[in-house]
Image 1 (cartoon, rainbow, N blue to C red):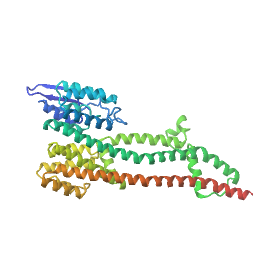
Image 2 (cartoon, helix red, strand yellow):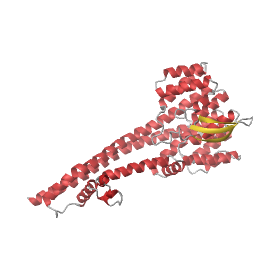
Image 3 (cartoon, rainbow, N blue to C red):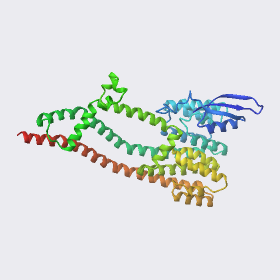
Image 4 (cartoon, rainbow, N blue to C red):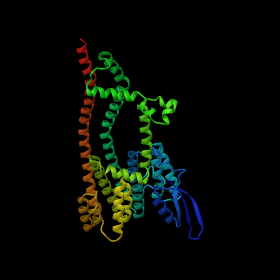
Length: 425
Protein backbone atom coordinates (compact mmCIF):
# COMPACT_ATOMS: atom_id res chain seq x y z
CA UNK A 1 0.00 0.00 0.00
CA UNK A 2 1.16 3.53 -0.78
CA UNK A 3 1.29 6.07 2.09
CA UNK A 4 1.98 9.80 2.37
CA UNK A 5 4.04 10.76 5.42
CA UNK A 6 5.52 13.74 7.23
CA UNK A 7 8.23 13.39 9.86
CA UNK A 8 10.73 15.46 11.83
CA UNK A 9 14.43 14.70 12.06
CA UNK A 10 16.58 14.92 15.20
CA UNK A 11 17.71 18.37 14.01
CA UNK A 12 14.07 19.56 13.95
CA UNK A 13 13.79 19.59 10.15
CA UNK A 14 10.48 18.46 8.60
CA UNK A 15 10.60 15.91 5.78
CA UNK A 16 7.77 14.47 3.70
CA UNK A 17 7.28 11.94 0.93
CA UNK A 18 5.56 8.72 -0.12
CA UNK A 19 6.43 5.13 0.75
CA UNK A 20 5.07 1.63 0.27
CA UNK A 21 4.37 -0.55 3.28
CA UNK A 22 2.21 -3.48 4.28
CA UNK A 23 0.33 -1.33 6.80
CA UNK A 24 0.38 2.02 8.57
CA UNK A 25 1.98 0.44 11.64
CA UNK A 26 4.74 -1.08 9.49
CA UNK A 27 5.58 2.32 7.99
CA UNK A 28 5.59 3.97 11.43
CA UNK A 29 8.03 1.34 12.68
CA UNK A 30 10.22 1.81 9.60
CA UNK A 31 10.34 5.61 10.02
CA UNK A 32 11.27 5.31 13.71
CA UNK A 33 13.98 2.81 12.80
CA UNK A 34 15.42 5.40 10.41
CA UNK A 35 15.74 7.89 13.29
CA UNK A 36 12.87 10.25 12.43
CA UNK A 37 9.68 11.04 14.33
CA UNK A 38 6.45 10.46 12.31
CA UNK A 39 4.02 13.40 12.38
CA UNK A 40 1.48 12.33 9.74
CA UNK A 41 0.96 8.99 7.97
CA UNK A 42 -2.08 8.49 5.75
CA UNK A 43 -3.10 6.36 2.78
CA UNK A 44 -2.30 7.78 -0.66
CA UNK A 45 -5.74 7.44 -2.24
CA UNK A 46 -4.48 8.38 -5.68
CA UNK A 47 -2.21 5.32 -5.71
CA UNK A 48 -4.18 2.93 -3.54
CA UNK A 49 -5.65 0.07 -5.58
CA UNK A 50 -6.59 -2.52 -3.00
CA UNK A 51 -9.91 -0.84 -2.28
CA UNK A 52 -11.18 -1.44 -5.79
CA UNK A 53 -13.95 -3.94 -6.35
CA UNK A 54 -11.82 -6.79 -7.63
CA UNK A 55 -8.67 -6.05 -5.59
CA UNK A 56 -5.13 -5.79 -6.89
CA UNK A 57 -4.56 -7.13 -10.40
CA UNK A 58 -1.03 -8.36 -9.70
CA UNK A 59 -0.47 -10.97 -7.06
CA UNK A 60 1.99 -13.77 -6.34
CA UNK A 61 0.50 -17.26 -6.18
CA UNK A 62 0.94 -19.22 -2.97
CA UNK A 63 2.77 -22.02 -4.80
CA UNK A 64 5.29 -19.53 -6.17
CA UNK A 65 5.74 -18.06 -2.70
CA UNK A 66 6.35 -21.51 -1.18
CA UNK A 67 8.98 -22.37 -3.81
CA UNK A 68 10.69 -18.99 -3.41
CA UNK A 69 10.75 -19.27 0.39
CA UNK A 70 12.19 -22.80 0.40
CA UNK A 71 14.82 -21.96 -2.20
CA UNK A 72 15.89 -18.79 -0.37
CA UNK A 73 16.12 -20.72 2.91
CA UNK A 74 18.32 -23.39 1.29
CA UNK A 75 20.64 -20.84 -0.32
CA UNK A 76 21.06 -18.85 2.90
CA UNK A 77 21.77 -22.07 4.85
CA UNK A 78 24.44 -22.92 2.26
CA UNK A 79 26.14 -19.56 2.87
CA UNK A 80 25.23 -17.93 -0.45
CA UNK A 81 25.22 -14.10 -0.13
CA UNK A 82 21.75 -12.59 0.03
CA UNK A 83 22.09 -10.38 -3.07
CA UNK A 84 23.40 -13.29 -5.12
CA UNK A 85 20.56 -15.52 -3.86
CA UNK A 86 17.91 -12.98 -4.82
CA UNK A 87 19.45 -12.47 -8.27
CA UNK A 88 19.47 -16.22 -8.91
CA UNK A 89 15.85 -16.62 -7.75
CA UNK A 90 14.81 -13.68 -9.91
CA UNK A 91 16.36 -15.29 -13.01
CA UNK A 92 14.59 -18.62 -12.32
CA UNK A 93 11.15 -17.22 -11.41
CA UNK A 94 8.34 -18.27 -13.79
CA UNK A 95 5.84 -15.63 -12.68
CA UNK A 96 6.54 -12.27 -14.45
CA UNK A 97 5.25 -10.26 -11.49
CA UNK A 98 7.43 -12.32 -9.14
CA UNK A 99 10.47 -11.47 -11.26
CA UNK A 100 9.49 -7.79 -11.10
CA UNK A 101 9.16 -7.97 -7.31
CA UNK A 102 12.47 -9.80 -6.83
CA UNK A 103 14.24 -7.27 -9.07
CA UNK A 104 13.02 -4.42 -6.86
CA UNK A 105 13.96 -6.29 -3.67
CA UNK A 106 17.45 -7.00 -5.03
CA UNK A 107 18.01 -3.29 -5.71
CA UNK A 108 16.77 -2.39 -2.21
CA UNK A 109 19.12 -4.92 -0.60
CA UNK A 110 22.08 -3.66 -2.63
CA UNK A 111 21.30 -0.14 -1.40
CA UNK A 112 21.50 -1.34 2.22
CA UNK A 113 17.83 -1.89 3.09
CA UNK A 114 17.10 -4.86 5.38
CA UNK A 115 15.36 -7.82 3.73
CA UNK A 116 12.19 -7.47 5.85
CA UNK A 117 11.81 -3.79 4.94
CA UNK A 118 12.36 -4.63 1.27
CA UNK A 119 9.62 -7.28 1.46
CA UNK A 120 7.29 -4.76 3.14
CA UNK A 121 7.26 -2.65 -0.03
CA UNK A 122 5.32 -5.40 -1.84
CA UNK A 123 2.22 -6.22 0.24
CA UNK A 124 0.61 -7.98 -2.76
CA UNK A 125 3.39 -10.57 -2.60
CA UNK A 126 4.34 -10.74 1.09
CA UNK A 127 1.81 -10.55 3.92
CA UNK A 128 2.38 -8.61 7.12
CA UNK A 129 3.01 -11.87 8.98
CA UNK A 130 5.61 -12.90 6.42
CA UNK A 131 7.40 -9.54 6.65
CA UNK A 132 7.46 -9.48 10.46
CA UNK A 133 8.75 -13.04 10.69
CA UNK A 134 11.57 -12.22 8.24
CA UNK A 135 12.44 -9.15 10.34
CA UNK A 136 12.49 -11.31 13.47
CA UNK A 137 14.75 -13.82 11.71
CA UNK A 138 17.16 -11.07 10.65
CA UNK A 139 17.35 -9.61 14.15
CA UNK A 140 17.82 -13.05 15.75
CA UNK A 141 20.32 -14.32 13.16
CA UNK A 142 18.09 -17.31 12.28
CA UNK A 143 16.74 -16.19 8.93
CA UNK A 144 17.16 -19.61 7.28
CA UNK A 145 15.20 -21.32 10.07
CA UNK A 146 12.46 -18.68 9.92
CA UNK A 147 12.12 -19.12 6.16
CA UNK A 148 11.65 -22.87 6.65
CA UNK A 149 8.86 -22.15 9.13
CA UNK A 150 7.32 -19.66 6.71
CA UNK A 151 7.39 -22.16 3.84
CA UNK A 152 5.58 -24.71 6.01
CA UNK A 153 3.01 -22.13 7.09
CA UNK A 154 2.34 -20.94 3.52
CA UNK A 155 1.99 -24.56 2.40
CA UNK A 156 -0.60 -25.22 5.11
CA UNK A 157 -2.59 -22.11 4.12
CA UNK A 158 -2.43 -23.09 0.45
CA UNK A 159 -3.62 -26.62 1.27
CA UNK A 160 -6.63 -25.34 3.23
CA UNK A 161 -7.58 -22.84 0.49
CA UNK A 162 -7.27 -25.52 -2.17
CA UNK A 163 -9.57 -27.86 -0.25
CA UNK A 164 -12.18 -25.13 0.23
CA UNK A 165 -12.09 -24.17 -3.47
CA UNK A 166 -12.32 -27.82 -4.51
CA UNK A 167 -15.30 -28.42 -2.20
CA UNK A 168 -17.14 -25.33 -3.44
CA UNK A 169 -16.48 -25.75 -7.16
CA UNK A 170 -19.04 -28.49 -7.82
CA UNK A 171 -21.95 -26.82 -5.96
CA UNK A 172 -21.24 -23.47 -7.62
CA UNK A 173 -21.19 -25.01 -11.13
CA UNK A 174 -24.40 -26.96 -10.52
CA UNK A 175 -26.15 -23.96 -8.97
CA UNK A 176 -25.10 -21.68 -11.84
CA UNK A 177 -26.33 -24.15 -14.48
CA UNK A 178 -29.62 -24.58 -12.57
CA UNK A 179 -30.26 -20.83 -12.39
CA UNK A 180 -29.44 -20.30 -16.09
CA UNK A 181 -31.64 -23.26 -17.09
CA UNK A 182 -34.51 -22.05 -14.88
CA UNK A 183 -34.59 -18.54 -16.33
CA UNK A 184 -34.11 -19.92 -19.85
CA UNK A 185 -37.16 -22.12 -19.38
CA UNK A 186 -39.17 -19.27 -17.86
CA UNK A 187 -38.32 -16.89 -20.72
CA UNK A 188 -38.31 -19.15 -23.78
CA UNK A 189 -40.24 -22.36 -23.15
CA UNK A 190 -42.98 -21.71 -20.58
CA UNK A 191 -44.64 -18.84 -22.56
CA UNK A 192 -45.10 -21.21 -25.53
CA UNK A 193 -46.39 -23.96 -23.25
CA UNK A 194 -48.86 -21.51 -21.68
CA UNK A 195 -50.16 -20.65 -25.15
CA UNK A 196 -50.61 -24.36 -25.91
CA UNK A 197 -52.54 -24.90 -22.67
CA UNK A 198 -54.83 -21.95 -23.40
CA UNK A 199 -55.41 -23.21 -26.93
CA UNK A 200 -56.31 -26.67 -25.67
CA UNK A 201 -58.42 -25.80 -22.64
CA UNK A 202 -59.58 -22.26 -23.32
CA UNK A 203 -59.35 -19.29 -20.95
CA UNK A 204 -61.43 -21.07 -18.26
CA UNK A 205 -59.35 -24.24 -18.14
CA UNK A 206 -58.66 -25.55 -14.62
CA UNK A 207 -54.93 -25.98 -14.12
CA UNK A 208 -53.00 -27.33 -11.11
CA UNK A 209 -51.74 -24.78 -8.60
CA UNK A 210 -48.06 -25.43 -9.38
CA UNK A 211 -48.74 -24.96 -13.11
CA UNK A 212 -50.51 -21.65 -12.48
CA UNK A 213 -47.59 -20.53 -10.28
CA UNK A 214 -45.08 -21.43 -13.00
CA UNK A 215 -47.07 -19.51 -15.64
CA UNK A 216 -47.35 -16.48 -13.32
CA UNK A 217 -43.57 -16.46 -12.72
CA UNK A 218 -42.95 -16.71 -16.46
CA UNK A 219 -45.38 -13.88 -17.24
CA UNK A 220 -43.74 -11.67 -14.61
CA UNK A 221 -40.24 -12.32 -16.03
CA UNK A 222 -41.31 -11.58 -19.62
CA UNK A 223 -43.54 -8.55 -19.00
CA UNK A 224 -42.46 -5.04 -17.94
CA UNK A 225 -45.23 -4.38 -15.43
CA UNK A 226 -42.81 -3.94 -12.52
CA UNK A 227 -40.86 -1.14 -14.23
CA UNK A 228 -44.04 0.72 -15.27
CA UNK A 229 -45.04 1.16 -11.62
CA UNK A 230 -41.77 3.00 -10.83
CA UNK A 231 -42.54 6.75 -11.31
CA UNK A 232 -39.33 7.98 -12.96
CA UNK A 233 -38.16 4.82 -14.75
CA UNK A 234 -41.62 4.01 -16.09
CA UNK A 235 -41.61 7.20 -18.16
CA UNK A 236 -38.25 6.50 -19.84
CA UNK A 237 -38.79 4.95 -23.30
CA UNK A 238 -35.84 2.55 -23.35
CA UNK A 239 -35.94 1.37 -19.73
CA UNK A 240 -39.75 0.99 -19.61
CA UNK A 241 -39.58 -1.65 -22.37
CA UNK A 242 -37.10 -3.87 -20.55
CA UNK A 243 -38.43 -7.20 -19.22
CA UNK A 244 -38.81 -7.36 -15.45
CA UNK A 245 -36.18 -10.11 -15.24
CA UNK A 246 -33.43 -8.03 -16.88
CA UNK A 247 -34.29 -5.00 -14.74
CA UNK A 248 -34.20 -7.02 -11.51
CA UNK A 249 -30.90 -8.63 -12.54
CA UNK A 250 -29.46 -5.14 -13.14
CA UNK A 251 -30.68 -4.03 -9.70
CA UNK A 252 -29.11 -7.12 -8.09
CA UNK A 253 -25.80 -6.45 -9.90
CA UNK A 254 -25.70 -2.80 -8.75
CA UNK A 255 -26.68 -3.80 -5.21
CA UNK A 256 -23.95 -6.47 -5.17
CA UNK A 257 -21.31 -3.94 -6.27
CA UNK A 258 -22.26 -1.49 -3.51
CA UNK A 259 -22.49 -4.30 -0.95
CA UNK A 260 -18.98 -5.50 -1.83
CA UNK A 261 -17.67 -1.96 -1.58
CA UNK A 262 -19.27 -1.58 1.86
CA UNK A 263 -17.83 -4.90 3.00
CA UNK A 264 -14.35 -3.60 2.10
CA UNK A 265 -14.71 -0.77 4.62
CA UNK A 266 -13.70 -1.39 8.24
CA UNK A 267 -17.26 -1.11 9.58
CA UNK A 268 -18.72 -3.27 6.81
CA UNK A 269 -16.00 -5.88 7.16
CA UNK A 270 -16.59 -6.15 10.91
CA UNK A 271 -20.35 -6.62 10.46
CA UNK A 272 -19.88 -9.13 7.65
CA UNK A 273 -17.39 -11.18 9.66
CA UNK A 274 -19.75 -11.10 12.64
CA UNK A 275 -22.55 -12.39 10.39
CA UNK A 276 -20.36 -15.25 9.15
CA UNK A 277 -19.70 -16.27 12.75
CA UNK A 278 -23.47 -16.66 13.28
CA UNK A 279 -24.14 -18.93 10.29
CA UNK A 280 -24.38 -22.58 11.45
CA UNK A 281 -21.99 -24.51 9.17
CA UNK A 282 -19.89 -21.55 8.00
CA UNK A 283 -19.19 -20.58 11.63
CA UNK A 284 -17.57 -23.95 12.39
CA UNK A 285 -15.30 -23.82 9.32
CA UNK A 286 -14.22 -20.20 9.91
CA UNK A 287 -13.48 -20.78 13.60
CA UNK A 288 -11.40 -23.89 12.96
CA UNK A 289 -9.42 -22.14 10.21
CA UNK A 290 -8.90 -19.06 12.40
CA UNK A 291 -7.73 -21.12 15.39
CA UNK A 292 -5.35 -23.14 13.21
CA UNK A 293 -3.95 -19.98 11.64
CA UNK A 294 -3.63 -18.26 15.04
CA UNK A 295 -1.83 -21.23 16.57
CA UNK A 296 0.65 -21.75 13.74
CA UNK A 297 1.39 -18.05 13.20
CA UNK A 298 1.73 -17.25 16.90
CA UNK A 299 3.93 -20.32 17.43
CA UNK A 300 6.18 -19.33 14.53
CA UNK A 301 6.55 -15.77 15.84
CA UNK A 302 7.24 -16.92 19.40
CA UNK A 303 9.77 -19.44 18.09
CA UNK A 304 11.47 -16.59 16.22
CA UNK A 305 11.90 -14.62 19.44
CA UNK A 306 9.15 -12.04 18.81
CA UNK A 307 7.56 -10.61 21.96
CA UNK A 308 4.06 -11.73 22.95
CA UNK A 309 2.51 -8.29 22.32
CA UNK A 310 4.07 -7.93 18.87
CA UNK A 311 3.14 -11.52 18.03
CA UNK A 312 -0.49 -10.90 19.05
CA UNK A 313 -0.69 -7.77 16.89
CA UNK A 314 0.71 -9.49 13.81
CA UNK A 315 -1.29 -12.69 14.35
CA UNK A 316 -4.58 -10.82 14.72
CA UNK A 317 -4.10 -9.17 11.34
CA UNK A 318 -3.42 -12.57 9.74
CA UNK A 319 -6.61 -14.31 10.90
CA UNK A 320 -8.87 -12.85 8.23
CA UNK A 321 -11.72 -12.13 10.66
CA UNK A 322 -12.11 -8.70 12.29
CA UNK A 323 -14.24 -9.98 15.19
CA UNK A 324 -11.64 -12.49 16.34
CA UNK A 325 -8.91 -9.93 15.67
CA UNK A 326 -10.74 -7.58 18.05
CA UNK A 327 -10.67 -10.26 20.75
CA UNK A 328 -6.92 -10.65 20.32
CA UNK A 329 -6.44 -6.88 20.60
CA UNK A 330 -8.39 -6.92 23.86
CA UNK A 331 -6.27 -9.86 25.03
CA UNK A 332 -3.10 -7.91 24.18
CA UNK A 333 -4.23 -5.08 26.49
CA UNK A 334 -4.61 -7.54 29.37
CA UNK A 335 -1.23 -9.11 28.61
CA UNK A 336 0.32 -5.63 28.64
CA UNK A 337 -1.17 -5.18 32.13
CA UNK A 338 0.61 -8.28 33.38
CA UNK A 339 -1.89 -11.10 32.85
CA UNK A 340 -0.95 -14.37 31.08
CA UNK A 341 -2.38 -14.85 27.57
CA UNK A 342 -4.33 -17.94 28.64
CA UNK A 343 -6.57 -15.86 30.93
CA UNK A 344 -8.27 -13.61 28.33
CA UNK A 345 -8.33 -16.49 25.80
CA UNK A 346 -10.23 -18.61 28.35
CA UNK A 347 -13.01 -15.95 28.43
CA UNK A 348 -13.19 -15.68 24.64
CA UNK A 349 -16.52 -16.27 22.89
CA UNK A 350 -14.86 -17.96 19.92
CA UNK A 351 -11.71 -19.74 21.12
CA UNK A 352 -12.53 -23.21 22.51
CA UNK A 353 -11.46 -24.21 26.02
CA UNK A 354 -8.76 -26.56 24.72
CA UNK A 355 -6.75 -23.60 23.34
CA UNK A 356 -6.70 -21.87 26.74
CA UNK A 357 -5.80 -25.11 28.51
CA UNK A 358 -2.95 -25.81 26.10
CA UNK A 359 -1.72 -22.22 26.51
CA UNK A 360 -1.59 -22.71 30.28
CA UNK A 361 0.56 -25.82 29.76
CA UNK A 362 2.80 -23.90 27.35
CA UNK A 363 3.18 -20.97 29.75
CA UNK A 364 4.07 -23.28 32.63
CA UNK A 365 6.62 -25.27 30.64
CA UNK A 366 7.96 -22.37 28.56
CA UNK A 367 7.08 -24.18 25.32
CA UNK A 368 4.19 -22.13 23.94
CA UNK A 369 5.42 -22.49 20.35
CA UNK A 370 5.55 -26.30 20.58
CA UNK A 371 2.11 -26.55 22.18
CA UNK A 372 0.49 -24.20 19.69
CA UNK A 373 2.03 -26.07 16.76
CA UNK A 374 0.28 -29.23 17.97
CA UNK A 375 -3.02 -27.28 18.21
CA UNK A 376 -2.49 -26.01 14.65
CA UNK A 377 -1.89 -29.55 13.37
CA UNK A 378 -5.03 -30.78 15.13
CA UNK A 379 -7.33 -28.04 13.82
CA UNK A 380 -5.92 -28.17 10.29
CA UNK A 381 -6.76 -31.87 10.26
CA UNK A 382 -10.23 -31.04 11.60
CA UNK A 383 -10.75 -28.51 8.80
CA UNK A 384 -9.64 -31.06 6.22
CA UNK A 385 -12.04 -33.71 7.53
CA UNK A 386 -14.91 -31.21 7.80
CA UNK A 387 -14.47 -29.90 4.25
CA UNK A 388 -14.24 -33.44 2.83
CA UNK A 389 -17.42 -34.36 4.69
CA UNK A 390 -19.27 -31.31 3.43
CA UNK A 391 -18.15 -32.02 -0.13
CA UNK A 392 -19.48 -35.57 0.16
CA UNK A 393 -22.85 -34.33 1.50
CA UNK A 394 -23.33 -31.36 -0.83
CA UNK A 395 -22.99 -33.38 -4.04
CA UNK A 396 -26.01 -35.70 -3.52
CA UNK A 397 -28.07 -32.82 -2.09
CA UNK A 398 -27.45 -30.75 -5.22
CA UNK A 399 -28.33 -33.70 -7.47
CA UNK A 400 -31.58 -34.34 -5.57
CA UNK A 401 -32.48 -30.62 -5.68
CA UNK A 402 -31.78 -30.39 -9.41
CA UNK A 403 -33.81 -33.55 -10.05
CA UNK A 404 -36.70 -32.20 -7.98
CA UNK A 405 -36.70 -28.93 -9.94
CA UNK A 406 -36.73 -30.78 -13.28
CA UNK A 407 -39.47 -33.11 -12.04
CA UNK A 408 -41.62 -30.18 -10.85
CA UNK A 409 -41.31 -28.40 -14.21
CA UNK A 410 -42.11 -31.62 -16.08
CA UNK A 411 -45.16 -32.29 -13.89
CA UNK A 412 -46.33 -28.67 -14.32
CA UNK A 413 -46.21 -29.06 -18.10
CA UNK A 414 -47.12 -32.68 -18.87
CA UNK A 415 -49.86 -33.12 -16.26
CA UNK A 416 -52.19 -30.36 -17.56
CA UNK A 417 -51.57 -31.34 -21.20
CA UNK A 418 -52.51 -34.94 -20.47
CA UNK A 419 -55.68 -33.92 -18.57
CA UNK A 420 -56.77 -31.43 -21.25
CA UNK A 421 -56.17 -34.03 -23.97
CA UNK A 422 -58.47 -36.46 -22.16
CA UNK A 423 -61.18 -33.80 -21.80
CA UNK A 424 -60.94 -32.94 -25.49
CA UNK A 425 -61.19 -36.61 -26.53
